Each structure stands twice: as C-alpha cells, then as structure tokens.
Image (cartoon, rainbow over all chains, first blue to last red; front, top):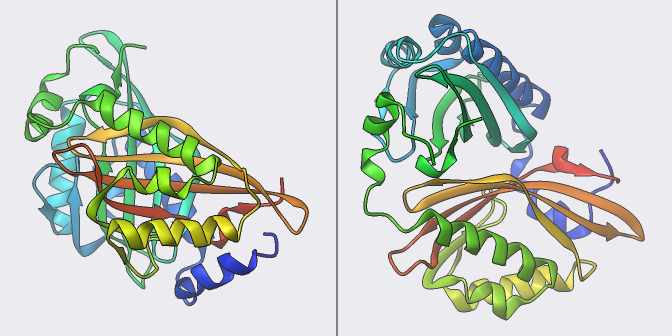
Length: 144
Length: 144
C-alpha cells in the first residue's frame, strides 16, 4: 500500500480501528464461492445473527440469519445451480463498510444469462455481515 | 434486455415507475467526465439543491449543492488535475438507486496513483443526484 496523499490521510482517518481489509475481501470471495455452489447454510454462516438483507436493495428487508438462510434456499431453488459468481474488480473497503461489483453467470429457460450486480456490505466487530444491500435491476440482465 | 426470469419479475416489481436506467447511466458517465476535468461547477450541477454527499462514506456529510460544489473545489485543488476517472464495469441500476465501480488514475508527489472507488447514488424524481456515498479506503490506493 503506498503512502497516502495528505488529503486522503484526513479523509480516511475515520476508518482507523476497523476490521482488516484483508478479512473483508476474504468474506466477499468466500461469499462468491458459496453463492456459486448454492450453499444456503454456508452463505448464512457469513451473516450475523441479527443481520438484515435487501436483495435487491429496493425490496423488502429480510431480518435475521435464519430468515436469510431460508431466503437463499428459496432463491437457489429458483435458479440453475451451480452458478458462476465472480468479483468484477477490487473490493472497495471503507472501514467496516465495503462494496464490490459482481457478475453472475447462470441459465434461465435453457439460455445463458448474465446478471451484473453489486453488493454493499456492513460488517460487525466480529467480522460477520451485519447488513447487505444488492444493487441491480432489469437493465443488468443480459443473454450471454 | 432479455425476458426476466420469473423470480426476477417479482423481485424487481418495486422498481417500476423509476427513472429510465439510461438516464442514470448517462449521469454516471457525465460525472466521470466532469470529475476527470476537475469541473466543480459541472459536477455540482448534477446534484439536487438539497443533496447529501459522503466521500468517503465514513466521513462527514456535505449538505446542499453549494457546499458540495465547494467540497469538490477543495478536493480538485488538492489533486493533480486533470485526472482520469472511468467506470469499471456496468452501472447497476435499482430503481432510483444505482451503484458503479470506478477507477481514478492521477499522480501524487509526482508518482502515478490509482484509486479504486465505488459510488452509490440515489436520484430524485427530477433525475438529479439526491445522495452520493463513495466507498474506498487505504487498501484501494495503488502506485500504478
């Protein structure tokens, strides 16, 4: 990591004492692997007991790890498993908040389908996901 | 845009009636151009009169278009203008919310500097930016 410019030192002072960025990146990577494998239990274990999920961010909030596990089970049941979810570019880590662009490749009605999504996650002090919002809409679905 | 899978139709129903995704993408692209040119007046004109900016998201809120203009002026004065800000991947559009990964290439102390950032924007019904949060931290600074 380079010496930060003077302006950045001031801007980013509020992020001191947060989780290691490496841990947060690892959770994003593990999330893509478990999501690709449609592993609802594994994905849910990344979340805090009282976590809140909004997927998409415009949808209703799913509250609590058990409800979140059930939500992923329902979602995976409706999809063509396994899938291929990958990070698109680096995870941006801002203290205990982080965000990353993701690309999901799957099939729908026998046709290849790509969905460009983007997850914003808030972490608690134990390194678990306390909140996750997924940003995507109809314009992010592509037949390839 | 392909026919959405059944599950997506339900998930995304809440996004009906929002701004055209094309408008939101255009604002992101215009933002990168104006930011690259260090055009504080131009960037500020993309924001609503009562907009709120947090850049980074962990920092203090800057409230109102005039304060936001002054904030960009201060930021550009501290940077090596012009810069090169580009989208990294597609803009993810979820109703009047949207998010995109961005890469800024500039110089600091005469050395090349790359900053990977990611902006989450909320738009008002007039198509102006009502809120913007920028996600980045020390781990997103690179000497190349």
